[in-house]
Image (cartoon, rainbow, N blue to C red; front, side, top):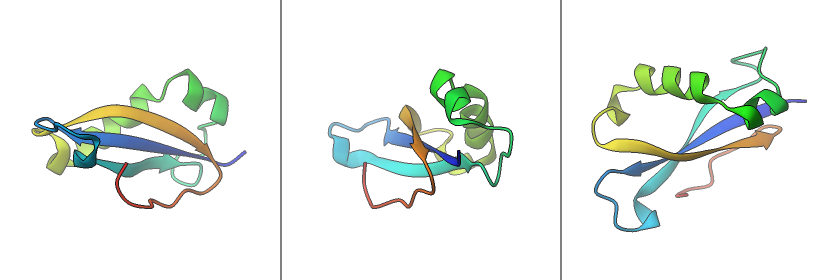
Amino acid sequence: MFVTVVAILCHLGAAAAGDCVEEIVTDSNMTPDITFQECLKGAQAPLAKWMGDHPLYHSNWRIDRYKCVPGHYEIKGRA
């Protein structure tokens, strides 16, 4: 099953959910060995790698949560 890992990142000073954004971390095309079950158990390794590769989110953002989406996912706007 194709899976997409989506992180919901919130600005550290966020007082409301409107200060959060969704970002696609990885999917089955980028990480062929990821399965839906592995994502549900914990996607910490892909999330940590993604945060390390995206310096924009290093200092003022935190990962609030993540979700495992079956199939292809397109970001629809704010989380």
